[in-house]
Picture 1 (cartoon, rainbow, N blue to C red):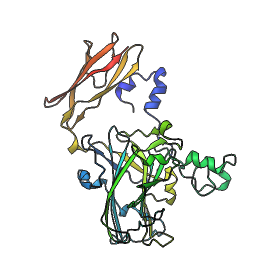
Picture 2: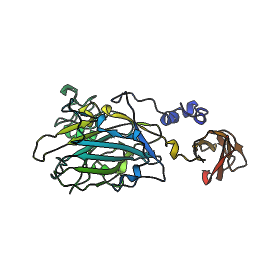
Picture 3: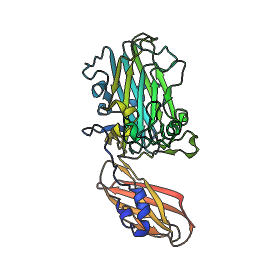
Length: 386
């Protein structure tokens, strides 16, 4: 439900705007409805450094960790997990205000296979659908399938008027993205972006760093840190028309991982194809991804009291402005006091205010908790009206 400040102006003239702000529920189901995985929120002053050092992640509770016990081997569903052969731990994070997903991947393997300069490489595959819209993102095989409901749709569902080449460039990684992250990458890019828009793996849309001390064929532990930017649209033509997925608290995104374990550079197949989703084809269909929720700050990381607020100009002709309290607090706020800078004030949490004349205003919010503790946040000339 929209917050109180929004409900007050949901007239017919505001309906289109309201629908954009508060969209309808998703019209498809993600995989594994029995579980929602959590994405840890890092404080804005403790963003993890991408250097292959996991110490930045020490604050992340174990409840956020995803181990190999959550995966199944697609090729051998009854295979018993053996941590002496392969053991992994994955944690996912985000930072409020940045459209990035941070990933820490820690893995032990008894045989690291990464000597080949091609695709044959121990791999962490990550597939992300930032708006959980679902649908195919990888046209399978030489005959690309366009406008299909499932990756495995029959040939009759293909639109013969659209060539396989055009379908590839239109679908491949456009609304959801797939990355083959090489673990480790030696003499090659950190990943293969299995998207028509291969630029998504480059900085400033991604970054990665790993640490390891083993050689090909040896056992050992790998620590890998990276971040990627999810896109609602990322086309092969370049980033100019791209639309980043907006990340916000409690949002559900589609996300999944596949761990591909090779144990012999000469072998044609892999030694394990471990999927977090219960569908092998999740690599190419966003509706088969798992649900991940972007969590609020953990209580221990929230400041005791920190007044914060934002605003939006609802009607520039009338100079009508909606203010929204976004304070961080571990205790209950009992009072709000707004000073709009024009001589008017309000004690509402999310007030609407009409400014009498054009100008730049110093606007202040002061909040108070039950024990009398206060916090104030002023913004100097942010509110500018014509």
